[in-house]
Image (cartoon, rainbow, N blue to C red; front, side, top):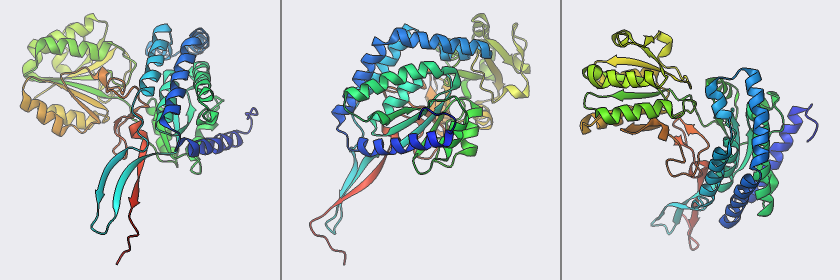
Length: 421
């Protein structure tokens, strides 16, 4: 395992160990998984100084690599964010265990008693960029749902991820669970990603979490099934019926709270009847907050805006930039989202219930919001403790992927000697 020169052999061994661990996790009692996560949370907090030291190495690597301010923000760990990791681990620990949960049950006239019961997926491969907290979130959610996990963090977060992973392993050991339940690929070599995507004998599903480049690579090269996680091209549509106070507060929060997360607003659509009132105020407030507003021709009269190009529609900035456009009506806004959205999260600001309902019915995104900041597009905010990502596809999982979404099911059939005629 220490020889990194033979990447295929290293990855095959990781896969073999993960599959063996998954077989044991499938029937591990909930209390032991909870104990492992609680112990991991204790270890993260006890080792916070070491984690911050490791993160400092990653931050220097990021500076040398010329990462944007938003990407550096995603990478940064301080004591407050480590507290968030600890809280996330404890929240997942405290959730109901999904494994073995009966989803549905019924009886047939033939005497068959049938249950549909949640089961783990098996081995989950998670490929992610920059954000080191994903190491904890993904490791914990997979463990809670009875899955073994192979984590391949980004080169930027290499040291931080290793420090956090060591704490997760400490939790496994204290609970008497196999250390191989949560493995971290021990190399920055991109060849490890290629191998992981091909490991159909060992890996049951791949979850990519990162930018368009990473997700595109995974979707092109994977032979293992993939939970689609496209970029967050997040739209906010201000309807003619929007409340001006709510609209101002929601748009500012959705764009500026944290610009580098996938739920950050990237495009503002304004009903033509709201331009001279709400629209003007919101755009001026964004500019005053330091956001570059790339506006269409109708909005360029507002001082401080810059001209949008065609490339600005359907673009994920992950930065203090937003595209803004006037639309004739709600249907035009919905059409724009269909053309340029990524099926991640889209929001309407409206007081008219009919307008809100029309938007809900016609916008085909994993998360559709009404009068709420899109920064809430997060498994933790949905009560899932944390998330492994936001799935934008339609197969198996959609929206925030928590522990329950990392399970499949099997049918359990009981009878008293039933025979088929």
